[in-house]
Length: 219
Image (cartoon, rainbow, N blue to C red; front, side, top):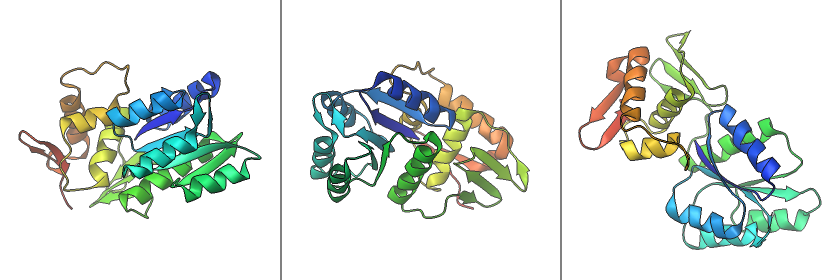
């Protein structure tokens, strides 16, 4: 999952980047409305964590602009404890959820997973294809009752493919899920991750569609 965090407190922002990274997310950070607008215009994200109070305006304005142009990216608002009116305005303005500061990181991660599931049209927390089950919350995969050891990026690739089995995911789309703005991407990184996954879950599980990308075979 690739997440945009819009937060002007550098300590909190860095903590979110590290903490969400530990549960498998790729996190990009910006600290103001202007940079948030630029990031949203240039990249696709699976979710946005949006602070309401920003140095150059309100996160609610960014949210309003997103929804006005049809951007349906799930948004979780971060608000101060006593800003009830902002929470109401945010939810009525298109936010998918909110969390008051201070907050628990595990709860934040769970809420992000929930709004991302709803955006994908899924209710079930697990991803299942035949005998393969992926648990995004636990970052675990089980095949035929046995746990499959996966690296963080292997897990990210597998989760992306299993979110919509049968749908082709391009190499660029997979790279966007795996790597943030300042991370170097080796030219064959996706191919290596797919090769490693096939060795662990079966070669036939992931199909190469020449010139287009990869897809999970429907079980």
